[in-house]
Image (cartoon, rainbow, N blue to C red; front, side, top):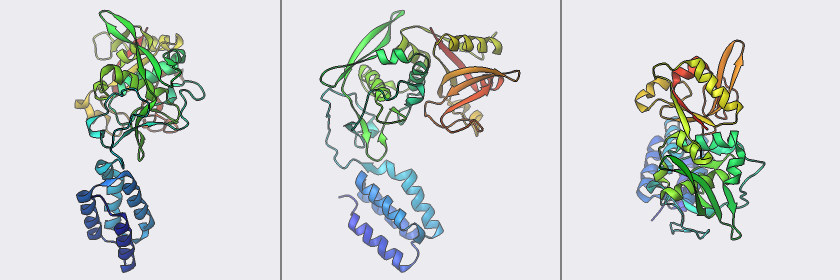
Length: 344
């Protein structure tokens, strides 16, 4: 059945003409939406009507409808057309089960593999729990953009051969995966998984897709080891330094990271697991999360480590604009992070 948009518009107009739209009115609307469901275009229409009559809601009704639209409506949405579409022609890795009716494979209009060079800042993690992969990808792009560029070979039919490394025995061996350029996309929330800051820059999404293709699905690449992600793109082994291990000295950690930065070797850092979530309350950091190491700095007699959140946002306070890039004094870094992994 689906939400009747014309009836919805008529009901909003009538409720508004009668006076305030109350919490009871909103409860009835939400019940109807949950019963009938809604497609992406219907969700857009609902959001438009809410915006049109925003001054007509009483306080409780306004709070309820805003919470529903911003936080709960997405879970109910399905595509306008749920038929499977594969415009690029090459078999694609399966999306997450929860996304099967909410995304389609879409060729991005005006998309380019690279726009204005490859930079670590281009990479953004979205609705896939692969922070280890995105943090590693961003770190390699930041330190060795040439390796990312060399990973791609565009074929005459518009598909790509994408090369990276996987561990075989004791060594990282190169593998090549063929993919097309269509990507999991939701008209409401745009690219569903990894993307560039500019969604028309495709290399982050295509590189993630190639890894998922090799693994068998997007679900198969959720959760992993950041150091392995670095190795995946460099072909070299990574070394982990456990901050809680006996004999680990802060100055030695700083020296190792500074040396890696000066030599153009990528690194990551990881927070403690979900059991330590309380440790990160109001810190701007998140438990069980991987970050790219962006650099080191000594200033005013203090040592700092610069990092980047693969979300491209969310960071400790007082670190400039919210772009995910921030710095921490070494002692605080060692307290809030569990380890660092350095490649090469």
